[in-house]
Image 1 (cartoon, rainbow, N blue to C red):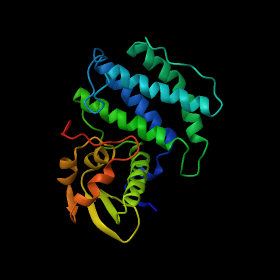
Image 2: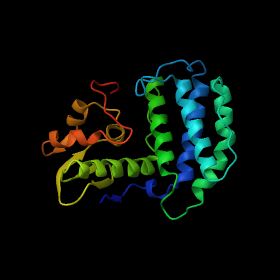
Image 3: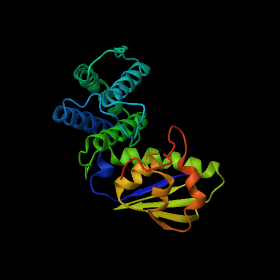
Image 4: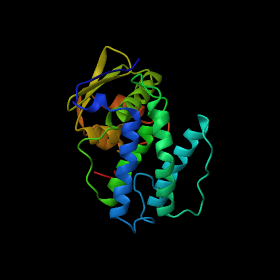
Length: 231
C-alpha cells in the first residue's frame, strides 16, 4: 500500500485538468521561444528529438480522448512542430473536459498528466530552460510515480521507504519503513521517473543504506540511465 500526506500550499488543490492544461501552455511557450529546436535531441529520451516528444504527447492526448468515446484524429507522421502544437492545442480542451469529469480527487487521466509533465521537464532540460518552482501537475505526477515505485518496492520484497521533499511526504511500499529518501522536488521527481542514474539516486539524502532500494527504481516504463544524462 502506498500512502501520501501532502502539505504544500496549492499542490493538493490543483485538479488533473488544471495540471494538463498548464503543461500544454508551458510547452507551447517553450517552443515559441525556441522555434528552431524541432530536431534537437532530448537527452532523457535518447531516441527522440523535440519534435518526437511533441508528437508523443499529442498522440497520447488523441488516444485518451478516443478511449473515452471521442472521435479519433490520428497524428500525421510528417507533421511539423507547428502543426503538432496546433493539433494538440485544438484537442487539449476536450482532454481537459475528460480529466475534469471525475471530480473526486483522483482522475482516470492522472497517468496522462504525469507523462505530459515528465516530458515537459524533459523538454526544459533539453532546451536549458529553468524548471518550474510551482506547477499544477507536481502533485499528480508525484502521486503516480510514488505509487509505481511502491509497487516495485513490494515486488522486490523490500520494506517500505519514506520519501520527503519540501512540504510533502509519501510512503512507497508498506510500513514500517526502513529507509528515508529526501531532496528537492525536481531531483526526487526525476529520480522516480527514471531520469537519474543509480549513482545520482544514491547520492541524494538517504537515511539508511540506499543500495537495496536502487533496483526498485526500475519499474514500468522507467529504467534509470547507467550514466548521468542531466544534473
